Image (cartoon, rainbow, N blue to C red; front, side, top):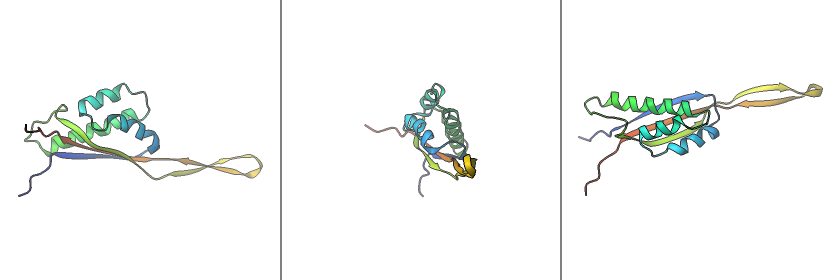
Length: 123
């Protein structure tokens, strides 16, 4: 029988921030251990940092819930994948002079986080 991989994911959909701005935060924590990434996000001065931290905490809780027989702590887990995709764009109109109008694009994104347990390397 195939062995289950010790990994879980969490997805935050329709976050009202552009994916481009969220990716700046995601790049700083990609590949880190979960406890180190959360500490780093606590001191990051970007608006998306609390939202990213919330998704990472959710993914860590999901892996603990999925594999309850394992004793998993944030020091044992690392961020295997983390990325932001573009979501739906809300289109609004801003009136301008002489009957014209400009289009305003209110962008959204989807954040996906996959956490896994770090496997010990045999020497």
